Length: 268
Ligand SMILES: [Zn+2]
Ligand SMILES: [Zn+2]
Image (cartoon, rainbow, N blue to C red):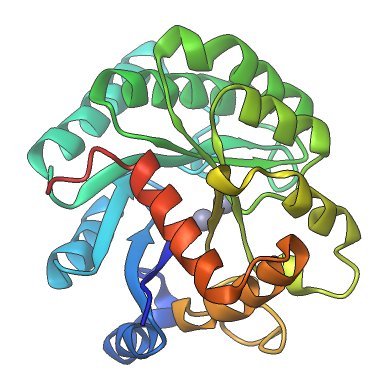
């Protein structure tokens, strides 16, 4: 069976506390051989790292601060500390930590920390460039500002990476692609009313598309409404392969190849 990569999940979350081992076994049985579990703040980095250490052949992790978790009151010193912790987490855990994030901008859930979200985003991009670790970008209700960051910072810092759980405009997709970024599609594409996202999938070149679950959130149809888990990713792949008129097996190979092209920093 071909190997699928779930390029974005949150395996350290409470939702998996009782049955993570079962969840990972189910993923394997369904062909999902590789999982990237994503950090959302530095305090809980050790939980994320532990999952990667517990499943050394199948799970990698990232380090970073989700935009909604960026504190409103941070001093210059705090930001310097963040940079050094990010760098330390990467250099001390080269096998496990392969990416930076998730970072980015989210003005939907929190906007009172806007300025600091931007600062944090900026320094994640910088660390990504200097450590050669791809960045995982989250963007919600912040398309214009995210676009500016992609346009002005990505080349400046020599950053590569991906836009995760893409649900933004075609314009933002274009800017991401213009800057050589990959675009990751989650379960939303399986929803009946996801016309715009389906068009985006058509638009993304075959060598730039990735897939993810964002587990435990956003289950694809027909599991919509239930807790999401990596095994369900196949339903997202089925829909994407229909949209792109590419056989399912080929779609799996393609997205897996894309993942390893982006994460060329993974130790052999
Ligand atoms: Zn996210
Ligand atoms: Zn996430």
